[in-house]
Length: 144
Image (cartoon, rainbow, N blue to C red; front, side, top):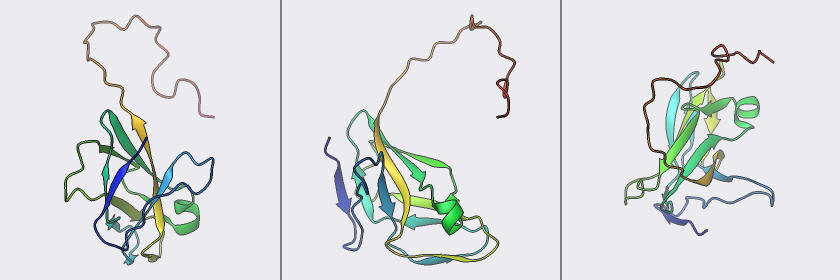
């Protein structure tokens, strides 16, 4: 599959897979900013993705962000639809400082990872009963 990407500024880094076994490609910011404790900020990538029809882009925090750098993606994960690809539809990465101290995120730093996945569309069908055995609700399989 080919993925068309438009750079809005020359310093925007095109994503790449860092190892042959990597499931996701990294996304970097084009901004440098000091984040205060608890601050949430949307970092620019300088990129617009032309996601193929019937696919979406899943954006997640890199696993090293929280333990090594002290920040995480504020919204957990992001879903980018294939029709979000207009001339001003830049991918922004919403990050939160989760430490008790200011942290600096620098331009060129890889702060998220993403993958392109197929969409499975479903038809919603309301039913009066599920027909399945009740498992006891949330957390019914235990804590560990």
